[in-house]
Amino acid sequence: MGLSQTDLVNEAEAHLTSLAAHVEAQVAINHQDVLIGMESFFRELLNKVFGWSLKNDNLTVGRQQDSFDLSDRSIRLAVQVTNTTDADKIRRTLQTF
Image (tube, rainbow, N blue to C red; front, side):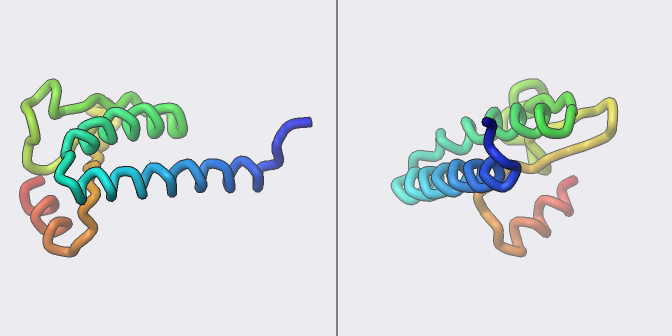
């Protein structure tokens, strides 16, 4: 018998929580490359979950552009992947968009 929806959600949450702890630990020791990997991870995850066709604009437009990391131009969607949640970061992102 397969896993129930609750079990699947709990398993996904456990994996994402573990991933968040890993990213936090890597950033704390100044290993910023982990954030580049997160862009690819979330591009694939969001494409699979929502059926989008996100591309990594840091690879196609230019490294670390100002306002967003991923986009699906056909549906006019942009996604910022960041580990920073403070209000100033959000304001700066919106202003540069």
